[in-house]
Length: 292
Image 1 (cartoon, rainbow, N blue to C red):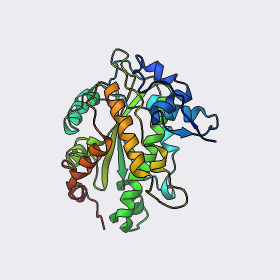
Image 2 (cartoon, rainbow, N blue to C red):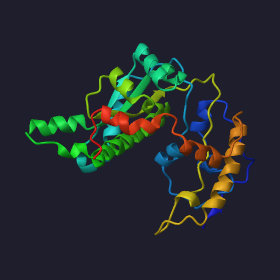
Image 3 (spheres, one colour):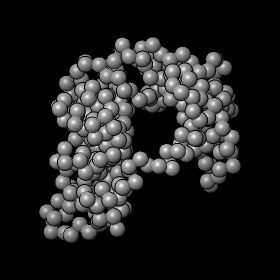
Image 4 (tube, rainbow, N blue to C red):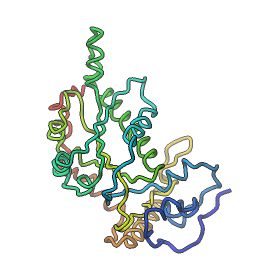
Protein backbone atom coordinates (compact mmCIF):
# COMPACT_ATOMS: atom_id res chain seq x y z
CA UNK A 1 0.00 0.00 0.00
CA UNK A 2 1.31 3.44 -0.88
CA UNK A 3 1.86 5.87 1.94
CA UNK A 4 2.69 9.56 1.83
CA UNK A 5 6.08 10.66 3.01
CA UNK A 6 6.24 12.03 6.58
CA UNK A 7 4.31 15.28 6.96
CA UNK A 8 7.19 17.38 8.26
CA UNK A 9 7.81 20.94 7.06
CA UNK A 10 8.96 21.40 3.49
CA UNK A 11 11.30 22.62 2.24
CA UNK A 12 13.67 21.56 5.01
CA UNK A 13 16.47 23.77 6.22
CA UNK A 14 19.63 23.12 4.24
CA UNK A 15 22.05 20.81 6.08
CA UNK A 16 24.84 22.65 7.84
CA UNK A 17 27.48 19.97 7.26
CA UNK A 18 28.05 17.30 4.56
CA UNK A 19 27.87 14.51 7.18
CA UNK A 20 24.27 15.48 7.90
CA UNK A 21 23.25 14.51 4.37
CA UNK A 22 25.18 11.22 4.41
CA UNK A 23 23.43 10.26 7.64
CA UNK A 24 19.87 11.23 6.69
CA UNK A 25 17.29 8.49 7.38
CA UNK A 26 15.74 6.99 4.26
CA UNK A 27 12.32 8.58 4.81
CA UNK A 28 13.87 12.04 5.11
CA UNK A 29 16.10 11.53 2.06
CA UNK A 30 13.07 10.44 0.01
CA UNK A 31 11.08 13.44 1.24
CA UNK A 32 13.84 15.74 0.05
CA UNK A 33 14.10 13.88 -3.24
CA UNK A 34 10.39 14.15 -4.08
CA UNK A 35 8.83 16.78 -1.84
CA UNK A 36 6.08 16.00 0.64
CA UNK A 37 3.27 14.97 -1.68
CA UNK A 38 4.74 11.82 -3.26
CA UNK A 39 3.25 8.54 -2.03
CA UNK A 40 5.67 5.62 -2.10
CA UNK A 41 5.38 2.03 -0.88
CA UNK A 42 7.64 0.41 1.69
CA UNK A 43 10.90 -0.58 -0.01
CA UNK A 44 13.40 -3.37 0.59
CA UNK A 45 16.37 -2.61 2.83
CA UNK A 46 19.43 -1.62 0.79
CA UNK A 47 22.52 0.32 1.79
CA UNK A 48 23.24 0.95 -1.92
CA UNK A 49 19.79 2.46 -2.44
CA UNK A 50 20.22 4.64 0.63
CA UNK A 51 23.47 6.01 -0.81
CA UNK A 52 21.81 6.64 -4.17
CA UNK A 53 18.88 8.65 -2.84
CA UNK A 54 21.23 10.92 -0.87
CA UNK A 55 23.06 11.92 -4.05
CA UNK A 56 23.59 15.63 -4.67
CA UNK A 57 25.97 17.68 -6.77
CA UNK A 58 28.95 19.04 -4.84
CA UNK A 59 30.65 22.15 -6.19
CA UNK A 60 32.73 23.25 -3.20
CA UNK A 61 35.82 21.13 -2.60
CA UNK A 62 38.38 21.26 0.19
CA UNK A 63 42.15 20.95 -0.20
CA UNK A 64 42.10 17.54 1.49
CA UNK A 65 43.84 14.99 -0.75
CA UNK A 66 42.21 11.77 -1.85
CA UNK A 67 43.24 8.57 -0.13
CA UNK A 68 45.77 6.39 -1.94
CA UNK A 69 44.04 3.97 -4.29
CA UNK A 70 40.91 6.11 -4.73
CA UNK A 71 41.39 6.61 -8.47
CA UNK A 72 41.96 2.91 -9.04
CA UNK A 73 38.88 2.07 -6.94
CA UNK A 74 36.73 4.40 -9.04
CA UNK A 75 38.03 2.89 -12.29
CA UNK A 76 37.40 -0.65 -11.01
CA UNK A 77 33.83 0.36 -10.13
CA UNK A 78 33.42 1.93 -13.57
CA UNK A 79 34.71 -1.19 -15.30
CA UNK A 80 32.16 -3.25 -13.41
CA UNK A 81 29.29 -1.53 -15.24
CA UNK A 82 27.50 -3.24 -18.10
CA UNK A 83 28.97 -2.76 -21.58
CA UNK A 84 27.21 -3.34 -24.89
CA UNK A 85 28.51 -6.63 -26.36
CA UNK A 86 31.49 -6.19 -24.00
CA UNK A 87 33.17 -3.90 -26.54
CA UNK A 88 33.97 -1.51 -23.64
CA UNK A 89 33.83 1.53 -25.92
CA UNK A 90 34.92 4.05 -23.32
CA UNK A 91 38.04 5.34 -21.60
CA UNK A 92 38.61 7.81 -18.78
CA UNK A 93 41.32 10.45 -18.45
CA UNK A 94 42.34 11.41 -14.90
CA UNK A 95 43.43 15.05 -14.72
CA UNK A 96 45.17 16.29 -11.56
CA UNK A 97 47.63 18.84 -12.91
CA UNK A 98 46.44 22.28 -11.71
CA UNK A 99 47.46 24.05 -14.91
CA UNK A 100 45.59 21.59 -17.12
CA UNK A 101 42.50 21.75 -14.88
CA UNK A 102 42.64 25.55 -15.13
CA UNK A 103 42.76 25.45 -18.93
CA UNK A 104 39.93 22.94 -19.08
CA UNK A 105 37.86 25.04 -16.69
CA UNK A 106 38.06 27.98 -19.10
CA UNK A 107 36.81 25.76 -21.92
CA UNK A 108 33.95 24.53 -19.72
CA UNK A 109 32.23 27.81 -18.78
CA UNK A 110 35.01 28.85 -16.35
CA UNK A 111 33.67 26.73 -13.49
CA UNK A 112 35.70 27.21 -10.31
CA UNK A 113 35.07 23.70 -8.98
CA UNK A 114 36.98 22.24 -11.94
CA UNK A 115 40.05 24.09 -10.70
CA UNK A 116 39.41 23.26 -7.03
CA UNK A 117 38.67 19.54 -7.17
CA UNK A 118 41.67 17.24 -6.59
CA UNK A 119 40.57 14.87 -9.36
CA UNK A 120 38.86 15.62 -12.67
CA UNK A 121 37.76 12.58 -14.65
CA UNK A 122 37.06 13.02 -18.36
CA UNK A 123 34.84 10.25 -19.72
CA UNK A 124 35.58 9.33 -23.32
CA UNK A 125 33.37 7.68 -25.94
CA UNK A 126 36.34 5.78 -27.32
CA UNK A 127 35.86 4.27 -30.75
CA UNK A 128 39.55 4.83 -31.46
CA UNK A 129 40.49 1.76 -29.44
CA UNK A 130 37.95 -0.30 -31.42
CA UNK A 131 39.57 0.97 -34.64
CA UNK A 132 42.98 -0.12 -33.39
CA UNK A 133 41.77 -3.53 -32.23
CA UNK A 134 40.10 -4.18 -35.59
CA UNK A 135 43.22 -3.05 -37.46
CA UNK A 136 45.33 -5.44 -35.38
CA UNK A 137 43.17 -8.24 -36.79
CA UNK A 138 43.27 -6.85 -40.34
CA UNK A 139 39.53 -6.09 -40.19
CA UNK A 140 37.97 -2.90 -41.55
CA UNK A 141 36.15 -1.20 -38.62
CA UNK A 142 33.37 0.14 -40.85
CA UNK A 143 30.88 -0.05 -37.99
CA UNK A 144 32.59 2.75 -36.07
CA UNK A 145 31.54 5.14 -38.85
CA UNK A 146 27.89 4.81 -37.80
CA UNK A 147 25.83 6.64 -35.19
CA UNK A 148 25.00 3.31 -33.53
CA UNK A 149 28.58 2.82 -32.35
CA UNK A 150 28.84 6.42 -31.15
CA UNK A 151 25.71 5.78 -29.08
CA UNK A 152 27.32 2.63 -27.71
CA UNK A 153 30.38 4.63 -26.66
CA UNK A 154 28.31 7.37 -25.02
CA UNK A 155 26.08 4.89 -23.19
CA UNK A 156 29.04 2.79 -22.03
CA UNK A 157 30.78 5.92 -20.73
CA UNK A 158 27.66 7.07 -18.88
CA UNK A 159 27.09 3.69 -17.23
CA UNK A 160 30.74 3.50 -16.20
CA UNK A 161 30.75 7.04 -14.79
CA UNK A 162 27.62 6.48 -12.73
CA UNK A 163 29.22 3.41 -11.16
CA UNK A 164 32.22 5.56 -10.27
CA UNK A 165 29.94 8.20 -8.71
CA UNK A 166 28.24 5.61 -6.53
CA UNK A 167 31.62 4.24 -5.42
CA UNK A 168 32.88 7.75 -4.63
CA UNK A 169 29.82 8.69 -2.62
CA UNK A 170 29.92 5.38 -0.73
CA UNK A 171 33.23 6.46 0.83
CA UNK A 172 32.12 10.02 1.59
CA UNK A 173 33.39 11.84 -1.47
CA UNK A 174 31.44 14.47 -3.41
CA UNK A 175 31.01 14.61 -7.17
CA UNK A 176 29.54 16.80 -9.88
CA UNK A 177 29.19 16.08 -13.59
CA UNK A 178 30.52 18.65 -16.08
CA UNK A 179 28.46 18.63 -19.27
CA UNK A 180 30.16 21.86 -20.32
CA UNK A 181 33.10 19.77 -21.52
CA UNK A 182 31.02 19.60 -24.71
CA UNK A 183 31.06 23.39 -25.13
CA UNK A 184 34.36 23.34 -27.03
CA UNK A 185 34.88 19.66 -27.86
CA UNK A 186 37.70 20.14 -30.36
CA UNK A 187 39.75 22.29 -27.96
CA UNK A 188 39.15 19.89 -25.07
CA UNK A 189 40.26 17.02 -27.32
CA UNK A 190 43.49 18.86 -28.16
CA UNK A 191 44.19 19.59 -24.50
CA UNK A 192 44.14 15.89 -23.61
CA UNK A 193 45.57 14.60 -26.92
CA UNK A 194 42.54 12.59 -28.01
CA UNK A 195 42.99 10.55 -31.18
CA UNK A 196 40.41 10.69 -34.00
CA UNK A 197 37.20 8.77 -33.28
CA UNK A 198 37.13 9.73 -29.59
CA UNK A 199 35.29 12.49 -27.73
CA UNK A 200 34.87 13.70 -24.16
CA UNK A 201 31.23 13.02 -23.28
CA UNK A 202 31.41 14.85 -19.93
CA UNK A 203 33.69 15.52 -17.01
CA UNK A 204 33.35 14.55 -13.36
CA UNK A 205 34.82 16.45 -10.41
CA UNK A 206 35.69 14.28 -7.42
CA UNK A 207 36.86 15.32 -3.98
CA UNK A 208 36.05 16.00 -0.35
CA UNK A 209 33.36 18.59 0.14
CA UNK A 210 34.50 21.81 1.79
CA UNK A 211 32.87 21.74 5.26
CA UNK A 212 33.12 25.54 5.46
CA UNK A 213 30.94 26.06 2.38
CA UNK A 214 27.15 25.98 2.36
CA UNK A 215 26.20 22.35 1.93
CA UNK A 216 24.10 21.63 -1.15
CA UNK A 217 20.88 19.83 -0.36
CA UNK A 218 19.29 16.87 -2.14
CA UNK A 219 17.58 18.28 -5.24
CA UNK A 220 13.98 17.21 -5.82
CA UNK A 221 13.13 15.21 -8.92
CA UNK A 222 9.95 14.87 -10.95
CA UNK A 223 7.23 12.75 -9.31
CA UNK A 224 7.48 9.09 -10.28
CA UNK A 225 4.13 9.35 -12.05
CA UNK A 226 5.82 11.65 -14.59
CA UNK A 227 8.59 9.20 -15.50
CA UNK A 228 7.22 5.74 -14.66
CA UNK A 229 5.00 4.24 -17.37
CA UNK A 230 3.39 0.83 -16.85
CA UNK A 231 3.04 -1.42 -19.90
CA UNK A 232 2.65 1.48 -22.36
CA UNK A 233 3.77 5.09 -22.54
CA UNK A 234 1.13 7.54 -21.40
CA UNK A 235 1.26 11.25 -20.55
CA UNK A 236 -2.22 11.68 -19.11
CA UNK A 237 -1.03 12.53 -15.58
CA UNK A 238 1.95 14.56 -16.75
CA UNK A 239 0.46 18.09 -16.65
CA UNK A 240 -0.50 17.79 -12.99
CA UNK A 241 2.77 16.08 -12.11
CA UNK A 242 4.77 18.89 -13.75
CA UNK A 243 2.66 21.56 -12.03
CA UNK A 244 3.26 19.85 -8.67
CA UNK A 245 6.97 19.67 -9.41
CA UNK A 246 7.10 23.36 -10.32
CA UNK A 247 5.79 24.16 -6.84
CA UNK A 248 8.29 21.82 -5.17
CA UNK A 249 11.21 23.26 -7.13
CA UNK A 250 10.17 26.83 -6.38
CA UNK A 251 10.20 26.02 -2.67
CA UNK A 252 13.54 24.23 -3.00
CA UNK A 253 15.15 27.13 -4.88
CA UNK A 254 13.99 29.57 -2.21
CA UNK A 255 15.35 27.32 0.55
CA UNK A 256 18.77 27.38 -1.15
CA UNK A 257 18.80 31.16 -1.43
CA UNK A 258 18.23 31.00 -5.20
CA UNK A 259 15.71 32.80 -7.35
CA UNK A 260 12.47 30.83 -7.56
CA UNK A 261 11.65 29.69 -11.08
CA UNK A 262 9.34 27.06 -12.56
CA UNK A 263 11.21 23.97 -13.69
CA UNK A 264 8.92 23.70 -16.71
CA UNK A 265 9.82 27.20 -17.90
CA UNK A 266 13.55 26.71 -17.31
CA UNK A 267 13.46 23.40 -19.17
CA UNK A 268 11.48 24.83 -22.09
CA UNK A 269 14.03 27.60 -22.44
CA UNK A 270 16.87 25.09 -22.25
CA UNK A 271 15.55 23.09 -25.19
CA UNK A 272 14.79 26.28 -27.10
CA UNK A 273 18.47 27.21 -27.37
CA UNK A 274 21.43 24.87 -26.92
CA UNK A 275 23.78 27.83 -26.44
CA UNK A 276 26.55 26.72 -28.77
CA UNK A 277 26.12 22.98 -28.55
CA UNK A 278 23.91 22.92 -31.64
CA UNK A 279 27.17 22.57 -33.59
CA UNK A 280 28.01 19.24 -31.94
CA UNK A 281 27.48 17.23 -35.14
CA UNK A 282 30.02 19.48 -36.88
CA UNK A 283 32.45 19.03 -33.97
CA UNK A 284 32.03 15.25 -34.03
CA UNK A 285 32.89 15.14 -37.72
CA UNK A 286 35.97 17.24 -36.99
CA UNK A 287 36.92 14.67 -34.35
CA UNK A 288 36.77 11.89 -36.93
CA UNK A 289 33.30 10.42 -36.41
CA UNK A 290 31.43 9.29 -39.52
CA UNK A 291 27.84 9.75 -38.24
CA UNK A 292 26.24 7.63 -40.96
